[in-house]
Amino acid sequence: MANIEARLKELGIVLPKPANPLANYVPGVIAGDLLFISGQLPFDAQGKIAPGHVGKLGLDIFNEAGQEAARMCAINLLAQAKAALGSLSRIRRCVRLGGFVNAGPKFHALPAVMNGASDFMVAVLGPEKGRHTRTTVGVAELPMDAAVEIDAVFEIDPESHH
Amino acid sequence: MANIEARLKELGIVLPKPANPLANYVPGVIAGDLLFISGQLPFDAQGKIAPGHVGKLGLDIFNEAGQEAARMCAINLLAQAKAALGSLSRIRRCVRLGGFVNAGPKFHALPAVMNGASDFMVAVLGPEKGRHTRTTVGVAELPMDAAVEIDAVFEIDPESHH
Amino acid sequence: MANIEARLKELGIVLPKPANPLANYVPGVIAGDLLFISGQLPFDAQGKIAPGHVGKLGLDIFNEAGQEAARMCAINLLAQAKAALGSLSRIRRCVRLGGFVNAGPKFHALPAVMNGASDFMVAVLGPEKGRHTRTTVGVAELPMDAAVEIDAVFEIDPESHH
Image 1 (cartoon, rainbow over the protein chains, first blue to last red):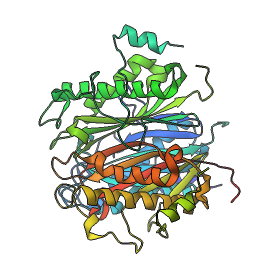
Image 2: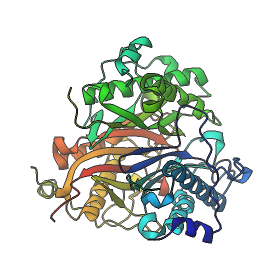
Image 3: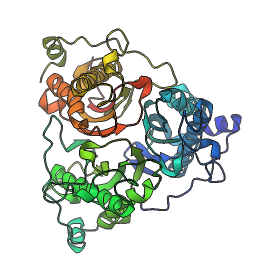
């Protein structure tokens, strides 16, 4: 079994301290052996969205920046999963990513943007646990004008010793 | 255990008789201990969408009306949950709300709109059962030009005596 | 119990050989008794999207073509379900369809478009297994400028003899 924490260290990734929502919702809910994570924005370790990750793809920012933003959403998804589970070793699999890209007119390279998140999940969790289903769409607006928002469902070990 | 029906009465909320979809789908499906509810529009008790809950946020209507529309979607989600379950006492928890806001150009106050639904869930179900994960995005168009559409997943007691 | 394969034959539908995504995600993931399927585009049996299923509803293409595109997404959902399960007889029920319509300005006939997918599910699986919850929204852009994208959750028999 791959050690997820070790893999994060190898990749030089420090999971940010996940912010708690300032409203009547929570970042993660466990229901049976599923963990649902709220839509995450590309906040950085300082809790800010870098100017390069704000705005519409194809209009304000372009493919690589979008991919980077998607990757940061995925890092935050994992940080929230860790907060909800206590330990990332309880993750059996990433089941689903829902990707919402802030898309300018005629921007159709949405899957390429979303690969930033998918590639990260596989890099960290390995292909067995990391490969997920996904749905990628281009939306009209996102909170804080973020370039990308992603939510997730993980399958977890509900009876864990951590 | 909070009595959800009593809380609804306290809040002066009468759940509307939920409308059945006029197509080949249903308002709610139970799978194991999860209840999925179809996307709900802000229909009022008369089965109409008030003119103030139609159109784009930031263009045709504004924050408070949007929040109110989101609250009405949440009322309808609960009405559909009751119809699917027989009794609201079978709800263990609201797991997830998926919020789609009909967003005009540069309208980014999407979370504030969605709070109308989240606050309602917590007011009725209490913080333990009511706090959920959520994903809020701004979409291009919604059925009937509604201001908001919200779907839900609840965790339920699958073996109930009602 | 309806024989799904026989019903497909009656309807003259040959499920296409489902394409594997060319990225770090998969078409289907089983978690317990749920099967999640990635967002499907209206690819035809040759793996192409017909010009009539490209573009915005209400602008480039119209209701019937949109409905047809939604139906093709649903055919691909079923093809992916078969690939993931080995046999369609393991499907207990279609739990949820998430419909994303590429919507031009003021195009609100989104449910009519989505009926193309819902009607197909009920035609093939029968009303008991085929009726699902659904969420239909109009999005700004879709991959490959497809007219419709749909994802799904099925309830399945996890312990199957196939």
